[in-house]
Image (spheres, rainbow, N blue to C red):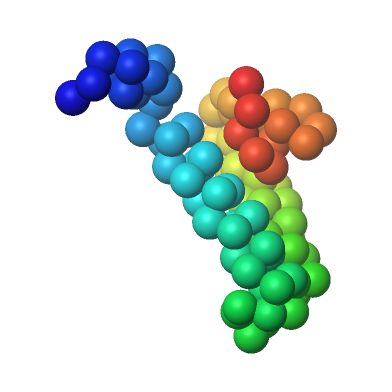
Length: 84
């Protein structure tokens, strides 16, 4: 394995890497639907992604409050895309 790739993978967690991959797929699906390669409405894809992100973060917050656990939520746009 090339050293550059090995160094990159050692600095990022598996969960954050998967989050970035899913975000890239989401953006690619929006772009492909804008160019009519995918038969779906880009606003539907965009709104579904935002809705699911809000629901997941709200569930995380509520369950953390119920079980008195610490959350690792960021503030603002960072929640949706997982930026440090």
